[in-house]
Image (cartoon, rainbow, N blue to C red):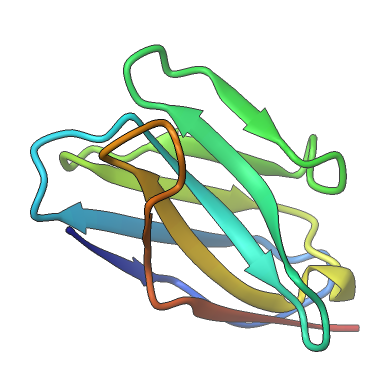
Length: 116
């Protein structure tokens, strides 16, 4: 199973940005999600979506600003980010729970930089 994330870049505070992740090598996933790791910090959970139920969960820091959704293509997940802030600057990692309900597969990360 491979996860390919895309959509990172440099934006200004208050802008919007979308990330996308495609999972290949599997016919289904239990869940997909996004984590992020800021410089000098640990990787933390951002948002996740249960694939069958479509239910979502968010970190408090992004509630109301980020939206995770299933993409139109099979096994793709999007993260729509609005009103981004410099504190959102991080490498964003796509993750998938394929073999279990734990995050067992990871993408390579995509850098999001928010300038003030």
